[in-house]
Every structure is written in C-alpha cells, then in structure tokens.
Amino acid sequence: MWNKVVIAGGGTAGWMTAALMAKTLCRAGFEVCLIESPTITTVGVGEATIPSFVHFNRLLGIDEKDLLKKVKATFKLGINFINWDKPGSDYIHGFSALGDQGPGLPFYHYWLRWQKRHPDTNIEDYFLASSCARKNKFMHPDPAVSSLFSGLGYAYHIDASLYAEYLKDYATSRNVKHIKADITDIRLNPSTGYIESLRLDDATVIAGDFFIDCTGFKSLLLGGALKVPFISWQKWLKCDRAQVVPTALTNENFVPYTKAVAQIAGWQWRIPLQHRVGNGLVYSSAYMDDNQAQSLLLSQIDSEPLAQPRMLSFTAGMRARFWEKNCVAVGLSSGFLEPLESTSIHMIQSAISRLSMLFPNAETNSVLAKQFNQETSAEMEKIRDFVILHYCLNNRSKEPFWQDCQNMALPDSLKHKLELYRNTAYIHHDHNDVFTEGSWLSVLVGQGVLPRHSMQMINTMPDEQLDHYMKSVRHQIAALSGQMPLHRDYIQRMLMV
Image 1: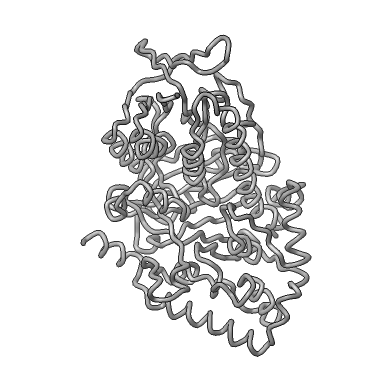
Image 2: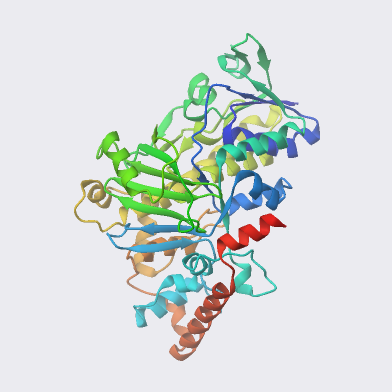
C-alpha cells in the first residue's frame, strides 16, 4: 500500500493539492508532506477563475464569506472581450446558461432561428450573467425566485497569493506536514525508475511512495527527473510573454467581470479585487518586443500603478504524459494555457480531483496512470481549442499577428467543430466538456460567425409561438438583472454581516 505522499512545490497548485489531500487521504491515514521553496515568490496580481472553482471550495467545506474576506475576492460573472472581432467590437462571455431549457431542443437553436428573422437581436439579452454584468449587478442564484435564476453561474476574482496562504492554514491544520526548503536532488530507483526520495538543501532526505510535482514551469520531477517531454502548442497559441502590474481600485473598475482587450500583438486583462486591480498584457515576442509591451501596458491601465511591471515567459503546451511511474504533475509543471479563459486554476482542480478518484496502490498504478493521462489530455486539448477559437475568428485586418492567427492551420478537432457549426448550427458538446454550447456560441456570435443553416427540427415551432417565447425569456432576464443590487453594494453588505 502506498501511504506516503510528497508534494513538491507550494503556490496555488501545491496548496490546492494539499488541501484536497487533507480532506481525503489524511483522513484515511495517509501521510502527506509538502515541500515549499522559501526563495520562489508568486506573481500576485490577481487571478480569475471559472464556476467550477466555487464547487471546489464547497467540497473543502470552506465558508464562502470567510474566503471572500481573506483572499480579497470579488464576484465574476464572465469575461468582457473587447476588439477581438475587430476594433470597436465588444461582447461578454457570461457564466449562465443561454435562455432556459427550451421546449424540446437546446435553447441556442431557438435563438439562432430567431436571429435569422431579427438580425439586430443581441444574444447577451438571453444570458442572465451577461445581462447582470452589463448592469454591474450581482446576487447569489436563488432557484426559488426563478428557474432562469437557478442557471446563473458565477466565479471569483482572487488574490492567488492570499488564496495559497489560506489553503496552507487549511491543510496544515489537518495534518499535512510543511517543509520549507529547496529540492537539490531527486533519487530514482535504479531498477524501476520510480522516484524514491527528494534531497533538500539542508541535506535532509524525504522518502515517499507517491510524488506530486507542483514545481511550476521547471517541472523538476516529471520533466526533469523522469524526462517526460513537453509538447508545444505555440504554432496555434503564439503568445509567449506577459507583463503584469497591479493598480489602484476605483469605483469604475470594480465590476463583476474580467476584461480582455485585444491589442496589436496579443491582449490585455483587467481583474478587480477588493483592494486593487490586477493587470497584464499577454503578447508574442515575435511581433512585439518587451519594451514596447511594457509601454503599451502602462499606457492602457486606467488607474495608478502600485508597482513596477514584471515580465513572465511561457510556452503554451502540455507534457506528453501527466502521470509517469509514481509521479503526477499538477499545475504549470503539467502544461500551460494562457489565461484568456481563466482555466489555470480549473486545471489544477480538475487534475487533483481526478487523482483523488484514481489514487493507486502499487498494483494498480499503471492502468490508473493510463486512464488519468487519457482524460487529462482530452480535457486540455478541448480547452486549447476553445482558446484558439478567439484568435482564429478575428477580423482585424492590419496587424501581422492577427492576420497570421486568421490564416493558421487549425487542429483537426477544432476545424471539425467549426465546420459542423457553420453548416448545421450544431455545437458538439460532451458531458465532461469545460465549456458548454452557450460558451461556444457566445464567442462564435460575438466574433461574427453565424451558421449557414438551422437544425430542421427547430422549424416545427410556428413563427408566432417562437416570437412569444423569445420575447418572454428576454423580458424575464431583463427583469431579474434589473432587480439585483450593484456588485459593490452586495459584497459590502455580505462582508459586514
């Protein structure tokens, strides 16, 4: 029986892993130890999440109000994409379902048929989250108010450094051992190739049965010691740099959504927290140098900078395998997708949740590793395709970066999905996909892509009935969003209680 787990690395990935292990394995008698470098600092400019993150904290039994206070969080209803189709374009990818459940078919088919007769209709009028975000409104979903209200999804903007500290307290109070040291050597079993122990900078040797690599881009265990190769996706996701800077909070930028503004060779984010705003410019060094990027970022921020900008380098892609022998990589050590759709923390959560379900004993390691790798690869590739979608559908005509994104050859999986939608209005969706049909349609319509044909079954509803149905849903959403309190007021009242 493997009962000693060693987590290499702290930060968000390490402490999320430790917290879930404390909730599950420690209670079953396992020993869990986390080794955190005292010399590695976090970026600390704010992190955006998606709705699955809310469920993760509920799983841990964390009180939401306490979490919001401690990590300086705000609510997030979606992402506002500006200038992605072309300069002046503006749409919100909201976190609610589109419309309601629909009388028989997914609601998006009814909206697409309605749009053909009413080309000026705005799809955001049928996303409750988007409608609330535009009005700067928020309150928790309440199924007792309306079935439409029960479909409102939300996430958080958090201070990732404070969140890691929050989970450190959670995990260490539940028997996770915490060691502050740098890893200087990784010992492998000479016959099996499995990791046996980690040597620390004070000469301490930490032995273990199972190791979780949370060492970030360095991937000391999986990529370094076990030599699992990295698969680059840079031919599709061209950005490889980010400049980041925190700025002062104002009433104007305290909004319940992330802002993502397309720029000449990438895009800029804005993430509002309770105490400051996180800003960053993601760009391709092949189209813009670092000095230009820093100048552009500082020229576009909308409040006083609180520090000097910092630069990060990365390559989009993933490891060929995520679980190798007795080691699983979690977070940046397993791969990276730029933060366009705020999936970094989700992929940490997904990996450790999957690992908890598949945690092995020595006899079942190889078959479970195969299943883990298949599921994780499929998930990352689907998220990759969704991120690529934003780039390849642009209609910006004068910038080399965006023109190259328009003309690049797409992954076969994304190419098929786009062809299916354009020709039939059908958006293929598996039950375990991170992004639903509504998310895909939000980006497709937001960036000007409508299908050539409608699904035949949708024509069974008479025009008069469809008109009544669509107007009724739009009216209900407008009424619900209009009745909600302002985002800032809601948070302030919540934190005072």
